Image (cartoon, rainbow, N blue to C red; front, side, top):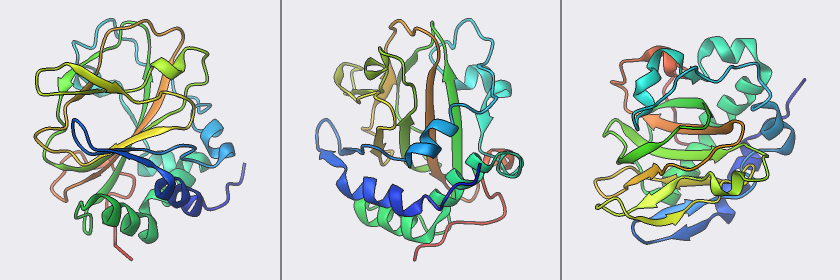
Length: 219
C-alpha cells in the first residue's frame, strides 16, 4: 500500500487538540493519523510479547519491544509514513510551539505497544532523556475507550483518564510532575498503541530510533 504524506493531517489534529491544565498541562488530540495509516499500523505482523507480568514497567520485556526502527521503516511502508510525519520539520516546529519543548537536535523514537490482559504500569514520570511524549491509541475493541493512560497526581491517584478511543491521543512534556500509568483493569484482546518520543542526542539504544543518524530540525 502507498501512503500519502501524513504530516499535514497530524498537524491539523495537533492544532485542534483540547488542552487540560490539571494536574499538569497535557493535550488530547483526536483523529491523530490519516484513517488508512491508523488502520495499517495495528495490522502490521508484530506479535504481542509473551510475558505474564510487566511488574508495572515496560522495561520488563525490553528484548521483545517493537520500534519503528530504520529496519522497520524499510520493511513496512506504514512505518515509513508514520516516521516521516513526525520527522517532518513543520510537525516538529508545531509541537515545539505548542508545548514549549526544545526539540531541535532531538531524535525520533516510536514504539508500537501490544498489551494483553494483565498489563499494568505503575505511576511514573518519563525519564529526563525524553523531551516530549505523545501516545496514540489504536485499538478498535468495544472496551478500548477505557484503555487510555491514567493521568495521576504525585501520590498516584488517578485524576483523569485519556480516552483510549481509536486514533485519539495524549500529549505532554515530561517533567517532575507528569505522573501517569495504567491501573490494573481487564484487557479483552490486545491493547494497541504508539508511544512517540523525541529524545536527547545521547540516547544510547540507537536501534530504537526511527532515524538514528538524523536529528530532527525545526522549520
